[in-house]
Image (tube, rainbow, N blue to C red; front, side, top):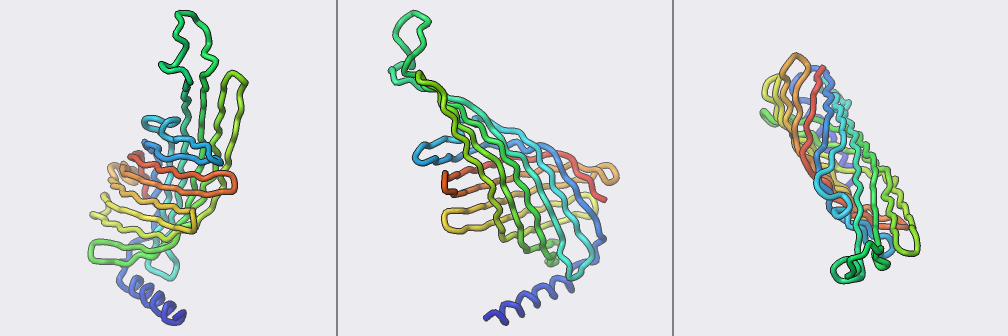
Length: 254
């Protein structure tokens, strides 16, 4: 079985090398703003933090992607990415119906509880893939290695005082990867990618699409959409977070 798998991989690689066009070596760098929404929750030993409640509306953070392609060879094309993920918000609840004391006096509600949550993450990924030409399309299967690091801090304030809990995440994850690209000459390109891995209670699914238009020499415009779903289980907590939204910025090809 292992020998058959190696023969299949070798044959697929050789077919890709023979069918691929003799495109020139080059770098693509894109960067800008990711305008996304956050959905999901964190389960901290039964204490549920609703991410949408504490990160309402749209979040805006930066991203950067790099891509290196070269002439057909045994070496794969390479790509890398970076994204910042963050959010902060607070919520106040009361045990009294109506949300406070039924008195026209500025008396603090002794039953009120204010919960503040903030998250700050950094995500990195590197990818190796081989291009297989399918007419005008280019299919590139490969492998990606992702890494997300950061924390969610929750503070609860009531009549007894303030308590703060911080849960940190520092998780690497390998993923199956595929990209489908459709270049239109040298100035316009459409592409879409997907990454996925699942192991026990942990799962990462990432997919998106983008359009790239060169408008002045090597400088161009970049626009697309990204959807990323993380399920990360640790000994202290369980995180289920989904981030999705538009990306836009500048492109440099050289």
